[in-house]
Length: 395
Image 1 (cartoon, rainbow, N blue to C red):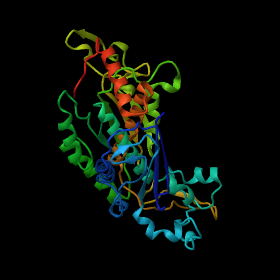
Image 2 (cartoon, one colour; image 1 turned 60 degrees about the vertical axis):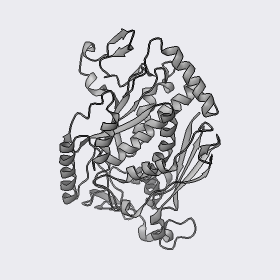
Image 3 (spheres, rainbow, N blue to C red; image 1 turned 90 degrees about the vertical axis):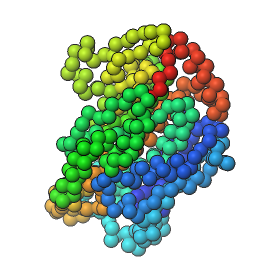
Image 4 (cartoon, helix red, strand yellow; image 1 turned 120 degrees about the vertical axis):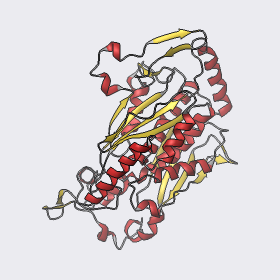
């Protein structure tokens, strides 16, 4: 019911996004969307491209007088760097296309398999779309979804918990501490809630820069205020945890996802894993732990939904790895493209966008409605029904 599509190349004219299924009547704050785009561009370890691009949203349809119309929302983010690439990446005759042709694929990137799949001698035809630049559109779309969720007091958060071999358990979210948590994370150049650990992460990134290396890491992403009952156990494709895992795995360079304490749970007995259930008249049904990540049997259980995503190091290295020139079939070093040293902080913002998409889509599936008022009425009816056992939890 709720869908979004992206198009565009890294050095093309711009990036295009289309959102279908947004209910009519939702107030949209475009400044807030642009702020989300700025969040994605920040982070210690980002490359020179971020100094060129000043991402801003241009809405072409679906929003009038700051409110959604219920029609497809179309928007464009211009690529400022395209002016330097017009003779290379234009849709017409490109007189300088051969100057930037890529024939030495980077290990770990889509260069080689994409060239084989699409029969491309010049791998730039692959890497321009495979570039993480595409995630700017995801963040913009995610900002729309976040505003829909915020209407129902559902909020998305993220935090970087490891870069390279520097890691920590993560900031413990407690009742009434969401604003404090967000302020700590947003103030950190690596989006880490611990000042000390954040400084250690930056030192690791600095060392990687000096060595011509790149670094990966891990971030947590979650959704607070989600009602129990999103997703379903009845068919595999409707399971909420499966949807979240797929959405996070689709982010470039993400190679692993766990819901809650999924990995650690595999080595523990059940008595130490499952979140026991309690009840009082004041609190309703509640848990004293949330190792399940807010999802049981593919269905949200009313606890905070959270996951971890693991990002591999970026495949472009300033000291390139061994490769093969696919024109001469001789051994050569891989091509060097302008790139980040570490993009885990930026990836965490993209992770928020993808989490927002899955949760917003699940809400639309559960409650339906063509307008925000219709959606609100159905949402409130459901809340009245479940409040017999479930109480609103404010973080």
